[in-house]
Length: 254
Image 1 (cartoon, rainbow, N blue to C red):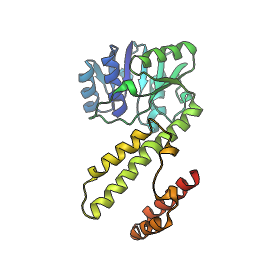
Image 2 (cartoon, one colour):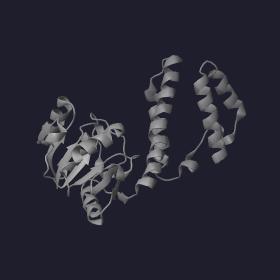
Image 3 (tube, rainbow, N blue to C red):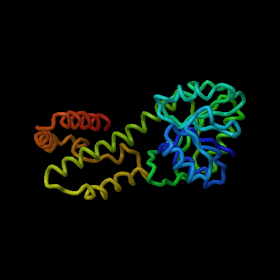
Image 4 (cartoon, rainbow, N blue to C red):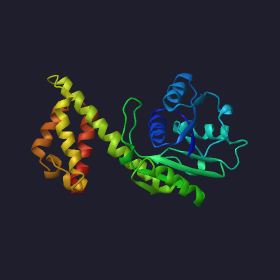
């Protein structure tokens, strides 16, 4: 398929590379900055622009991958004179109908992306939605060329998928950051000592549910250990609150 990428950030960069490797033609890359647009276009061997009015009008699908807070304005700027073209966005928490196009949809690869780290797209679940059945099948065909797992999911339920991803990824990573700060402050211990523990915790989830994999003092409600931990956090009141809330939530789930 011929694809135009509107955006050149973390997700667009990884998605563009995956589509290119799968044999699709990336016709053009748009970004508001010349550096980002040209860098990705060079990798994908296509043209680029920093002007939305210069985005080409010949492609099978236009993928808008920009920050949520500018998605509506970017889509609006592209709308005029583009009847009959298929536009999709890649935002997990934004509704499909935010796009003003008659042919519209969503192409959401659920993963955390960084420009400087390649990912294996084949294991990334892709969630798709479209207003028209033909467009849904088009997106499914496109997704299956880069991913082994494709789900149809409407905008309402995708909001909860994205919320779950925030808990499983962003909040979990923040806990890693808090742990790293504690290690640094108390003994200057390198964070990599935690990596085998993190790896084992994650690997358990391939064979058991998160509830079954849960261990630690909160599961046992070992108040002796938990009280000592809270005392150690006496000078970190915000972390104390997090510890208490998380421990309570873990115990009540069991």
